[in-house]
Amino acid sequence: MNTKPLPKDYLKLHLIVVILGFTAILGRLTEVSTLGVVFFRTFLAATGMWAVAQFQKKSLKISLAQAWPLLGVGAIMSFHWICFFGSARASTVAVSLVTFSTTSFFTSIIEPFVRKTKISWVEVILGVLVVMGMYFVFTFEGKYIVGILIGLVGALLSTVFSVINGQFAQKYDAQTVTFYEMVGAFGAMWIYIPIIIFALPNEHFQLIPTNYDWLWIGILGLVCTVYPYNEMMHLLKKISAFTLNLAINMEPIYGIIMAYFIFGESEKMTSGFYIGGILILLSVVLHPFLKKK
Image 1 (cartoon, rainbow, N blue to C red):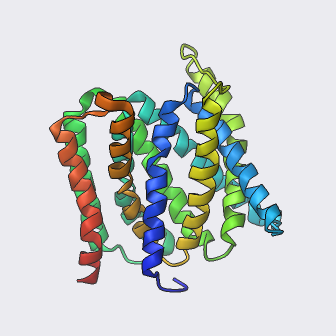
Image 2 (spheres, rainbow, N blue to C red):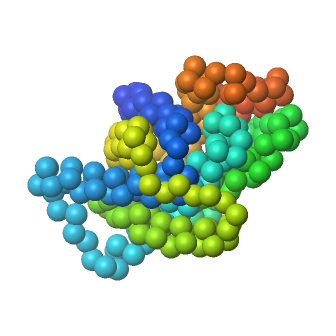
């Protein structure tokens, strides 16, 4: 890493996590289908990043050879969002958020291969703790099996793009990376939407927002995407992708609390679910102590 992280960096990281914890709620509040939510989110995020750069009089120009990998990661990111919001729709916000927490386990395995470093057994142990937590979630919330599986695919995709972004963060400016990835995410949606509609002919897809949908998607695309993803790119210059994803495991805590107050009893889970959630979040608390040892 270029510089050591400061306490304010960790505070900023958890502010980002709180904001991200609200994204699943915003996706659930809209009447628009998951595909419509992601389509307009990526459009607004790309437009927002471009507007910020113009306001700051900052150039986003890079070569085509440099742009293609960033656009490709954006395509992965948009499919992750489809899985993330799709999981919440197929189950509950709580299940989607807790399932997403498995990113730390996937990262403990994938990041060492990408960075060509030794596997940290501390990270693997914490990852196994996450898997144990997921076992309880699976066992006691079997009726949400489809939502859980979709969420796991989304978590794996999230791991892939965050690990790759850890490499990009050392090479490019954070705004430039975020802008091209959002453009790639928006462009990929033009491919994903017809394929998914064709694959699920019996499903009804409402793609165009109405009334308050524009407000929720506007907040989602600008406040909950442009700021956190840009700041995460800055933080990846100082911290590892594993540390980032482990902190994001706190997202369920913030998200579940907010979801319970907004959606009420529909977000109430079984005791096994909360046991699993506690095990997953325990990995966050143990990480700094085990790493120090």
